[in-house]
Length: 223
Ligand code: DX5
Ligand code: ZN
Image (tube, rainbow, N blue to C red; front, side):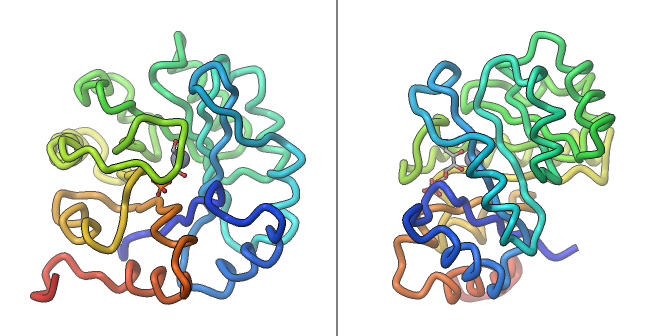
């Protein structure tokens, strides 16, 4: 399977959201990454259902919804109705994670679990077989434009080994500080899906950055 590029609309121009969505539609990107923050789980607020629904109205690719919120259970049905294809909840925010994953599947969505930089991979051992995706945070969640944390490489390799044993279909997604400089090494470590916000939207030619990310090959000679 070719790797997945998921531009994060957190870095889009909200005054020109339709334009930016259409740019992603026309690009080689695979998903729209949608960051929902509640000001409690993370020290920032982003947006909620009205914006998600607005994105859904124009997006022609699946919505990959990353919930940085406490008590996600109470909103799963609404996120599914608003158009989420994938719902990812944080390990650190879910007391009854297995129940939450069941609820996401029952709502007709693919289910993901995100891990903060300090959360060990091994904590997923008894849930990994039930997941479609694991999102490794490579920055502390809450803000775009932060510096990539290098220990992410170890976590991806460790997760890849666990997934090969317990869930070979698992999608390994990496989120935070991903750019054209580190995507090749992340691919080599075992990541399948790449979220990128500032590395795409801060550039003059975002469609070209997306194409370059999509066409990066872990085995090629060039950097
Ligand atoms: C951070 C979010 C990310 C963010 C990534 O909490 O989960 O999805 O938008 O932005 P960059 O690529 O700029 O680090
Ligand atoms: Zn995210």
